[in-house]
Every structure is written in structure tokens, then in C-alpha cells.
Image 1 (spheres, rainbow, N blue to C red):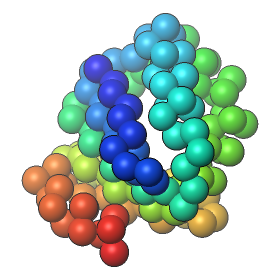
Image 2 (cartoon, helix red, strand yellow; image 1 turned 90 degrees about the vertical axis):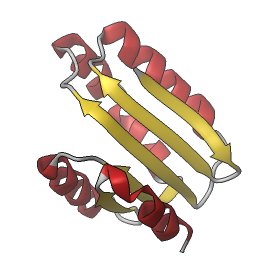
Image 3 (spheres, rainbow, N blue to C red; image 1 turned 180 degrees about the horizontal axis):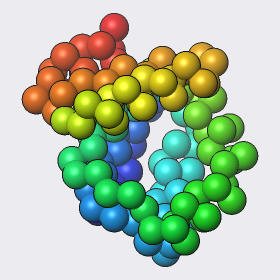
Image 4 (cartoon, one colour; image 1 turned 135 degrees about the vertical axis):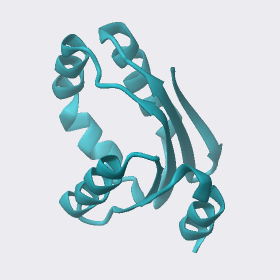
Length: 121
């Protein structure tokens, strides 16, 4: 399950659980583009409920859309990632270093209030 929801004029919330196949990846990326249209100086809350690697064909779909995804990320200045996996926290924060202008901070899933506060500060 992957859910993308615009929850404010400059905010998108994403929930992820389970494994994405190629069709699911296409649908999610289309939904992400649609829900983020017009956002400037945005914030994002990414809740990783249960992480599973996407199928190999889904990864191919994701890589084929990387240029447009990089453009989309420029619309955001801050993203909070909720996860209970230590390695995902590290990878998330490392990704933040790769995208100038986007600060990514990881939190445990039970730290949602802290993540919300950080996003709005």
C-alpha cells in the first residue's frame, strides 16, 4: 500500500507499506506528481509503516522517471521520515545531503509529534 495525500497548500503526506510492482510504481509516481502540483517551499511527512524492496520492474519504472522526480523534490525544503528501521533513518538523512535545499530528518514512528513540530518550525 502506498498512499499520497496533499494535506495542506504546501504539504504532502505519504504512507508506505508492502511491496510495489511495476503497475503500482507507475500509479504512485503519477499520484505523487498530481498531488504535488503547484507546491512551493513544501514540506513532506513520509511514514514508512513496513518497508519492502520494490520488484525489479518497479525499480526500472522509478529510474526511468528520475529526472522528473528530481524536479519534484525541488518543490520541497523539508521532509520528515517516520520509520523504525535504523538503516532507513540513515539512508533517508544521507539522501537529504544529496539534494541541495532539501533537509531530511528521520524519526521513530512513535515520534510523530516531534516530526510534526520539526516540519512546522
